Image (tube, rainbow, N blue to C red):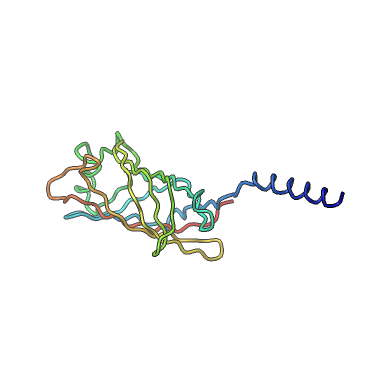
Length: 178
């Protein structure tokens, strides 16, 4: 009788534990401390206005998710003329397409850190990208760092003298969300 009860309890415990949902760690972006830099042949600059949701747990990568966007209007190329031209009708069209966004579909561990695969959307054109990154955590704070390259033509971005590729460098300090 006791063996039957113990087996029954074990089955019940295992059944309930199968429904336990692992809660991922939510991270808040440190608004003034992050950096999004970009560079191409003949042009470089920064973007501000980063916002979105970051859920990342090194112990639960399948549930990790990056859903972020940055305001195109915050683009600064260090020159009023270059900045105005880049935001304008013939390039990024900030009035028509106010955000550049990224939605991850997968996060995996690599030898050098991590990689996220997902969709980058610029000017309402979405393309798959992989972003290799590192993550360091200490005392409830963390820092994501990554570098990747996009082909400008993939997003219908063409401008004489700018080059074909855009190198992007990210530094995103975060703190654990509530």
